[in-house]
Amino acid sequence: MALQIGLFAAATAPAAVAEDSPQAGFKRIRGVAIERLLAGKEFGDGVHWRYSFQQNGNTIEYAMSQRQKLSWRAQDDVLCWHSARGEECFEVWASSSALRLQPTGLGVPLEGSLSRLIP
Image 1 (cartoon, rainbow, N blue to C red):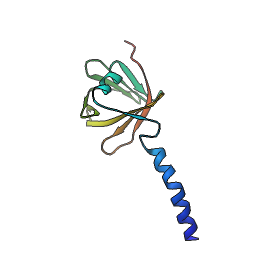
Image 2 (cartoon, helix red, strand yellow):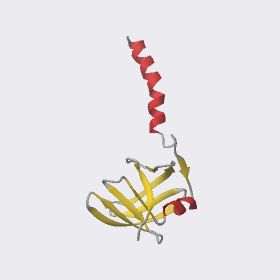
Image 3 (tube, rainbow, N blue to C red):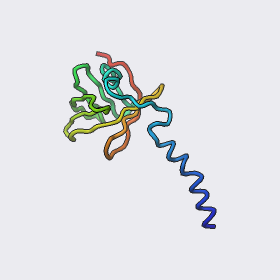
Image 4 (cartoon, rainbow, N blue to C red):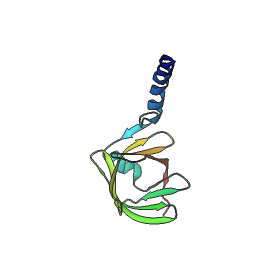
């Protein structure tokens, strides 16, 4: 019985790891390409939160009916923003239809869509 459980875990573990990998269907965005991708765009999940990335490095975060001003920049191949929570940095991953911000430290990735910011 223990051998069967071990084989099942070994057979299913690689698939679970691959699904949770930022690389699965996503391409890593680096350097100035991060600024080109995000400036003048809005990133959100369509319901709970969204980030409006201004051309001048300001961002407005809307989350659960709360509005907060942030400042953002691309630095060392990651996106960083500063808010009341402190500085947070993310690897930026893009697919054909989605964007994923993977925290460089502890935290849950943010995944949503990117659209043009309407002034």
